[in-house]
Length: 344
Image 1 (cartoon, one colour):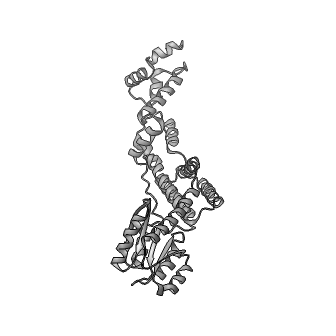
Image 2 (cartoon, rainbow, N blue to C red):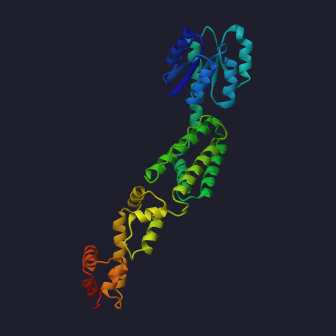
Image 3 (cartoon, rainbow, N blue to C red):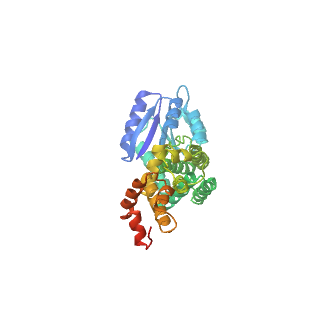
């Protein structure tokens, strides 16, 4: 569906043209209106239309100046000039700003329908030319996401370079590139938020879809990475792997989730969710499993007393250790040793 903006300072003409455009093609989602060039420019910047129809003579900002600014800021926005016979010189100047279509007043239904159909056909052709295989966009998103998550700036730069090369090879125009970058940035933020660890805001909407759009995506991804770096207190490694390593180093004492989260620079609630999501175990379940695996290794060495093993894996209360070990292995520590042929 397509959005069209109609600009004319005369209410009756504006209303009539709005109606004719709405009836011209079922692909037209809806037509909006503005009563002068400045109003139109504000609306274009806030929510870019697919087509622009504008009168030439208007107060505040006339159609000529509007066309000049649109050509400068939104060069790929198709513009249709509406002019009277006496405005031909103005219309000719508008053509120098990239305007390729014009309608003479009084505007007829047939002329509007023909012009709308022609422009929409051009938009459809451009959209088809901009088709990108889903597998490729997923690959770009994977690389950008990994670059952000693992704080690898070079990965982000490589992904951006690959995107730029593809867009150049396919000869995408500025609008196609801008729309693609906007889509990728939104999906990237959604992917990172799906991890449910840190809240990532979607990058601000790219208003002027110009040649800097690819660099804008790179800057947005880099900013996300730096925000993540700050939240992790500069930690370059994957937080779950770091947590596992920290747990392993401190199996001999009662280690809390809050302590590990603080060590990694994470909110405890976020860390708890992340750990469960990435390991399919809660922090306590994983910590207990590692303690019991270490206890098994120590119990298999005859020179270790069971009470010493209990202390080695962080249990000051021996009965609690025995109960936990049996729940985990199905045997008491003594029974486990006996099963290995070790007595005492």
